[in-house]
Amino acid sequence: QKEVEQNSGPLSVPEGAIASLNCTYSDRGSQSFFWYRQYSGKSPELIMSIYSNGDKEDGRFTAQLNKASQYVSLLIRDSQPSDSATYLCTVGGSARQLTFGSGTQLTVLP
Amino acid sequence: GAGVSQTPSNKVTEKGKYVELRCDPISGHTALYWYRQSLGQGPEFLIYFQGTGAADDSGLPNDRFFAVRPEGSVSTLKIQRTERGDSAVYLCASSLGEGAFGSYNEQFFGPGTRLTVL
Image 1 (tube, one colour):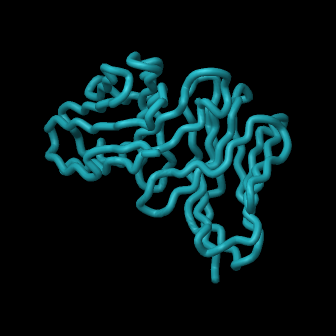
Image 2 (cartoon, one colour; image 1 turned 60 degrees about the vertical axis):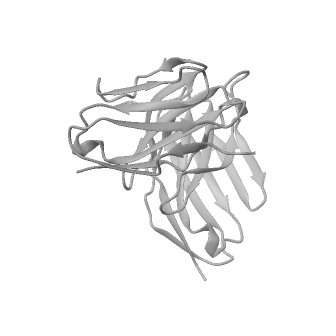
């Protein structure tokens, strides 16, 4: 059974701070890693993808991958109230299907 | 361009009835996926199409669930003899699907259909 584990939160950070979201996965054969953002009542929105070890930066978002530790993280710099949402850590393997964590609920306090 | 569209946005039905949920993927995307999301959980995989054929249907919970994609574009998820436990948001996603693994598997979701079985 492939598993993706996230702290469910809720995680609260003040506006302007760095939000750090973490995730571990069980399948060592996993090849692709994504972070989706999901606002309440809406569908998941892809915000970051990462395929190799190290860091990948896109604007205020940085994804980090460590395959040896089976660990993925997402850093959000200069957090804004509009970043308040549930963040889904998502893993893809040799099969095309994605395995999602249960999500971390982030609240950015103004 | 247009994203993934799903109809209806909401569907309320009675236990035992038959329902069809429709998904229209992003133009040019050859891969289409169905997921189901219950409250407080991440989406769970149901079935994946590459073109017209179901490449992986291992997530379908039982034989009451069936999906088709006859022309390689629009897909319909069909649920027979609905049960209250089928109530969830049904999400459709599409991706480019071909070529090397990686960005071709980036999946983009539609708005979902909220199914309520009374």
